[in-house]
Length: 226
Image (cartoon, rainbow, N blue to C red; front, side):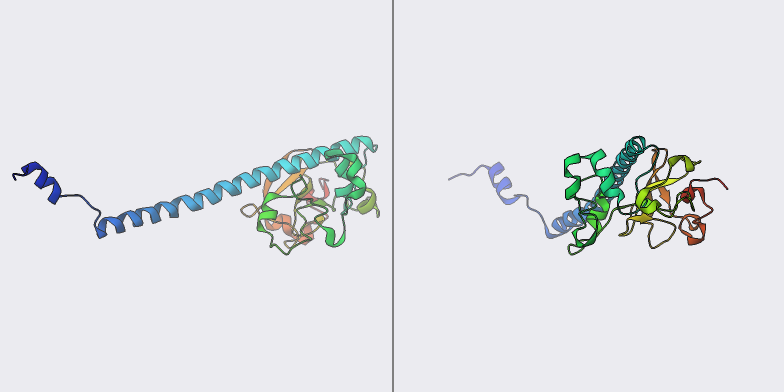
């Protein structure tokens, strides 16, 4: 029986991947993965930082409403600020159920709310139950009042509101003050901050900001130009 020559040619020259070709494809996939995976991680971190800044803007807005309702007095410059600001951000009827001390945290940065930084949540170990995302600047208007940690200060004592930090990223503390162990540069070595005037920004943690000796001289901390 005669067989078509063209059929015989096709039959004996059927294409297939060689070992070299397979290794080449695998190598290309590896290179692409090495390029794409870090990029995806950077995009995710950028998104978390943007969400964090949004959280802080909302906290700043809640603080402004609190100040208007309390004759110019700020929220307490201590851990109680979480509880005082909750009614201005969420359901006022829930405020009595908010526990801001002890092992119930969060509790204070309540998961999924503006009081929790998404990057802090992502970076925390599963067994950490007392992580705090944001702290309030407890150095504002030094010497203004011995009770400012529980009662706040008059906002008019802050004469440089665009320079003065109000709330920002912290390392498991409710207070934000000049100390490298408190200021948290979790966003690519930058600390997200909302200022007293309401604008939010990522701040590079320079020695000038983290130096404990700057607590009564730097407008960033005290809200006064000296």
